[in-house]
Length: 296
Image 1 (tube, rainbow, N blue to C red):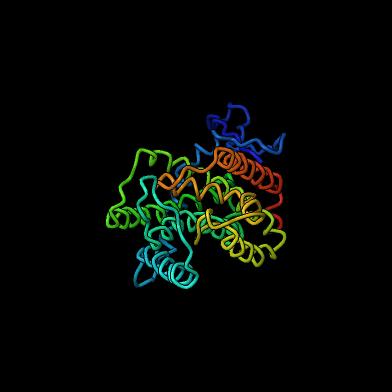
Image 2 (image 1 turned 90 degrees about the vertical axis):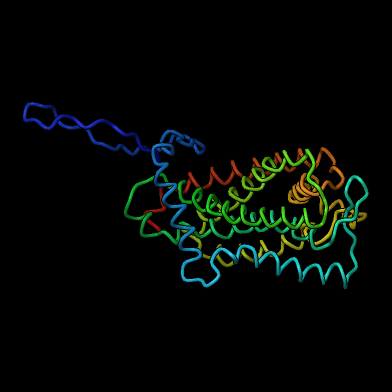
């Protein structure tokens, strides 16, 4: 549904009947995002984002430090398992400098946590705000957007720590760092597309809330996060290339650490798949939006 704001008529006996301030009309297509309406409700978007950030770390002793501790602990454990016990090798920089396994792991976890947090957070955001959805009109698309924007704060904190770790390891940033925002945009698009479809389906099928975390966990091991693509050979390498996150992670490590540049077709495949996920998720969300208030 979409809304149109109309001016109020003058309050006088001789004035004609006042027009409604807000008119809600059915959409004519599955994919018709009203950008003007989203812009009019931008203050609500910022308020929802700020509320989400505050509630996430409310009544926690360490607060936002959990954003740093979680990837640090995960990187330490995975570095021990895959780097020490499994003795897997990681890519070197373009100049032949060896990358510490812990730095390699943490760099991968920065974008993976960004992706996984958006999927897990946004996939349940409609059910978590059921009272708001059922009683008040606003563009429902603001809820998944606010959930994704809230994760940008976690990403910024992790990025600061990543800069410190990389400079400590004496691995400088190159000009390819300029591609990092584009890669993050692709990751955010893919995560938001999956999450919007999941949160729309979860209104009617609550099983989604139980299935999705399992799928995300399986996707973690099916993606080259704890290891390099160079460790894959034969059919396994071809299978892993079907995962769009494979090209994204390789592209990300190239922009941050200066590892070998991934094949161009993997980048094109990743970009196309991310946009397809975003369009599909938006289409499903808007198609099911008309039933949210009745079912939730």
